[in-house]
Amino acid sequence: MKFKWLLPFLGCALLFISSPSTSFAQEGSWKVLAPTPTPRTEVGVVNLNEKIYVIGGFTPDGIAEKVEVYDPASGEWSEAAPLPRALHHVAVVAVNGKIYVIGGFATGMWSPVNTVYAYDPQSNAWTEKAPMPTERGALAAGVIDGKIHAVGGALKKFLRLKNTGAHEVYDPATDTWTEAADIPTPRDHLTVSVLGGKLYALGGRIDVDFGNNLDLNEAYDPATGQWQTLAPLPTKRSGITSQAVNGKIFVFGGEATEGTFDKNEAYDPATNTWQTYKPMPNPCHGLGSALVNGSIHLITGGPNPGGGGSQYHQVFTPF
Image (cartoon, rainbow, N blue to C red; front, top):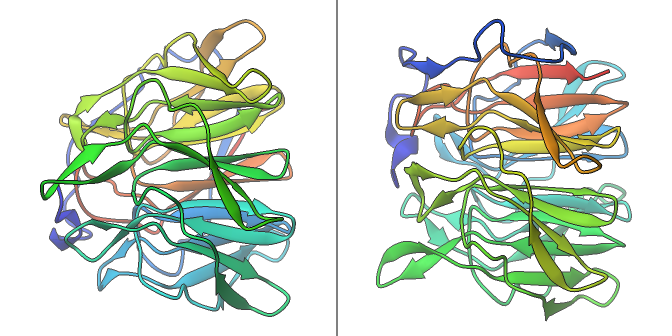
């Protein structure tokens, strides 16, 4: 739904897709922290210097350029310099002490952009960098050997949002982009994690339609320049987030036509298998995540399919 931020933001909850109480093979532990300052969804979230930055997204007031910062050591929130423009569905990573915000959509008309903004915490300022070759939003990105791999997403074709398989690599040291092998299955609203020097692209949807979710698990090896298809995600879903910790990739949340997900499923590349862990306290989609000291912080997200936002701050410790 291209205008989902216009829907009631904190309306009555709809159905969600629950993990059966007996289905999870592993436990882990959850805690719910105090609400985030601003209700949001489709945000960018990243850990920089053990602080969690929450960037852009939809809010009750529309699309945000606001940047809020959480300090897990003190439990306090603060604000950083806002993005140069309001964006949603961005890709966000941290490299060499800076945050990079790549692509996304501008305006409620979901206009894809190719901008790259770098944030320096020392100066509390943003700098515009070389643009990404392919303008797109709802993409995903990961860092391998100091370079940012931006994959998938959606761009405008004949006034409609359609998928791109673009896989473009940004080198912050030279402020340049190069092309790499396209992702085998073009998709958007996917998640990416890096583990063992490989890029894992998980889940997502076709042409921004959460009625057409995917269970794909495709991995890119920069040493060979090739993609490999691996054991699929147990639950088809999109609007998800993931984090790699202790040799596993944990995938959280998502949405489908029938509801939002509380799913917490983990992939082990060593065995090419999945395990189901204790579900999220609050199901949602369009959330972001950051790994801090072995715990995964899940920030905001929409509790209902296609619209709304929240102030959720849920923390999962796997082991």
